[in-house]
Length: 149
Length: 149
Image (cartoon, each protein chain N blue to C red):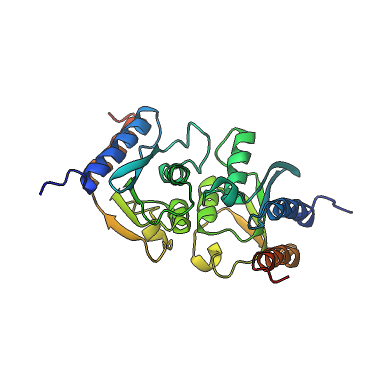
């Protein structure tokens, strides 16, 4: 049976958020939070706009999802994010006890896996969904920034 | 010469913030951010009030300090916080490139040192300022919560 609401579907939604960040001159990372195939939060990186290092897509998505469900814990939720979370965001996901994290591109320098950040023991992780697209939007951004195109 | 604005002075201000959290039924952690002996941000834990695991004292203090100085980076600032930061907060402090972190009580279970979170290489850390007072307010809180007093 065709299942329209799969990980690829929701990662495309996260990529739309990343594109919105790109269009505003923000490092293009996007995220959505999903519960029972419903998107309850959408966010993208806003560190430049808000002049705030804490304004990563994941942080805003966690705040927004908690607000939607009226509770601090996100055990029933899946976070889709275009880039592997950093230490800060993985630390926030630890506190949220999120059920599942699905990310696109790996961040081999500053991703939580390399940095050794601990997730909640019940959190499942899926890697590499639309990894190529998620990497490409980052590459395009930094090429544009450096005036190399 | 007497120096009224020392680490103990500012940690007392962070403790006042922790007391404000205590009075609202929040886990009593407080923080202030200081630049040139001036407090530019004060914050306390608001995770219950805001139903948001990201609302730790340090996260709000970083956002508030960045807002005050109009820049994302806090290299000239010192953060005073009553409890050792967690992975999330240490991850945010990494991005902020904060000049100095002074904390009171250690958090041997969930503190960033035990968890292995990386700070910015230029960030200096001072531990144990008013540690007893910072521990006591946490102990009082959890004793009250469990109805043991």
